[in-house]
Image (cartoon, rainbow, N blue to C red):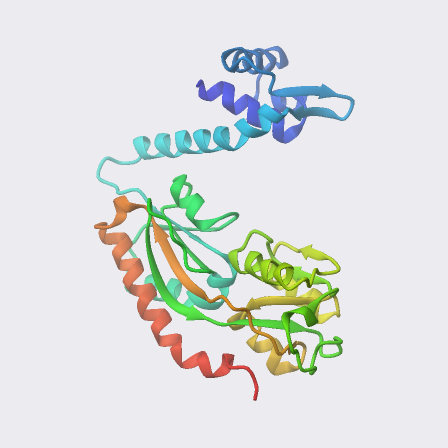
Length: 305
């Protein structure tokens, strides 16, 4: 596929306007239209519909979009790599979920900055499934908290077990109440950062299995947003315990006496081609060391007696 055609397609899809896309790309509008038509002719299917509200992706266009984005990103990375000095190694692109970056990996970043200043690293916030992003080569490796992964086409290591805490505002109806079964959690609003996280999926599956459907599920985009909302009395949330230590200490949140049947872990997945890469192995060894040193914090994460 022609990269210029895919770039025009993505720009129209994002701006929802052929005119705006032409302005962004610095092209004449007929050129953008011609590139889209060429792509549609090659694939033998319409990709965009013109409507009163603007250009919209067709069903085929939506399916193409994620692949086009990946192809264009890889093309840009390839160009950057080729144009770099001949003796320079490509930067290691690390992906990390928000909760593990803020609450587990900041010491790792500081350690690498002090001890390995020459390492060429790039850190990106994960915006999707870690394994899929590594598999699609959008990141080289990814750190995340979730249920144990089982992917055969990437390398993987568990760094440490994590605890989960179901938390709510201290005045929530379930705070301080003895929870006899998962069914007791029915008909309450849930807040979460992302519904696609493995522990949120596991939580909702347990509720469904117990016939304990929530009143509503609010996907708020970040752990901090979840904590603020729950702290203001909006429902309850299942979060990695390490993320709510401060709020529990200050009395802004309170644990609900319930634990899921599944376990979660801090983990790292990476491309198999990095198995012998010295830069990556330095990062992984440092991550192991940093997270091992945090084991003493576990006493802070234990549920109150």
